[in-house]
Length: 543
Picture (cartoon, rainbow, N blue to C red):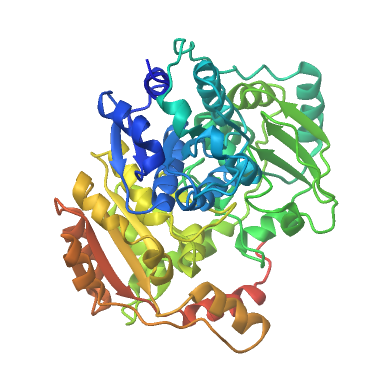
């Protein structure tokens, strides 16, 4: 058996069903072995698209998504997607073809030291130098990628090793079980909670990764503690729940900031500092902090933990709630009202180009609670994160650690492959859309009918927003766009253009009903960005 064949058998043992790839000369043996396996190879139009698809697969399932490229430029094209997965804690295993071992000591066509190159963007990586390494290296790659905190790993497979004979069998698939929290730490945390007058929870993506959303809801309800979510923690507690303060994540003051400012105790649950740095919510470094997670806290001057409760999140929340007296007299801050009023005002708007609030409210109206939104990075992300009412974990996926543009379209392909019965919308700006719009061809070819909704402002709106705030002028942010309707149709997709505010909802519903991918070009009025900045700068404390 060839090493490539053994590697494919190992992938099958790991439960891999889809593998996202761009072919190359140095991965021919692996592709040939895959052709005789149960694994479906999704051929993408760019390696970055393959990496983002693997990224979203990992986020949505907790099982490592797998992407494959050739050496040299194919491998370097994977880097952004792997960095995104690693910093955002999505499990991904990348496999790269590589030059023969006997030409690595000299200048050689397309050869790069990929193990060194990939080291900063992976949790672990290695080069497979013998066929006997295959089973152990593959099992280790998946185990490390999927263990908290998850991230990306990388296997580099030289062409001559892939074709060589290999001995061995796939190893048993095992993952470590999260331990029980230490009783003494639970008692210390309970003392802090019982003494607190205004506690608040910050729920991060770890709640979703750990499947602890139900436990979080029971914890919050029993103790009557309000819950703010990071952008990547949206849906950990339904936004329709009266204890949800919705999302926190803007560097500037927002409504939820008042809750954090009043808080004398912050309970972080599954919180990764990369999601929302503690200097924004604890600038005076005076908050008592209970850190509930599977991993110890990162060192940060604004995040000095009073008590760390480490272990299984659901169990930690359940055991801690049982040690704390219910807060029957707790008064909840009226923060939700201001956000809900903002959403309703946007929903009623008939302005054209459309207000971003209108677009967000319309997307919510068109989708069921279990449907999926994959949000790209740009000015639209701020509006989606603040105002999109998320009812289920992982139903609004936002990249906010590495925050890479171009993730929405390939991410939607992966989401629709996983959940063909659910509606999927890729929400993107015109800048992010054009970075990986070629994957519309992939979507049409593999049969993943999702909708891409483009916030079209003819520029890099988020950078323009920041320039106006800091400099009072803009530079180097404008561009022109193709005709997005004709562009979509050239791939075999459906194309739509919004020409009035009231058209968006019926067009979105029509697009979601199509048997092929669809693109909606929606002009947006980003003058609202500075208006939001102005409103937030003059907020009065409702508490």
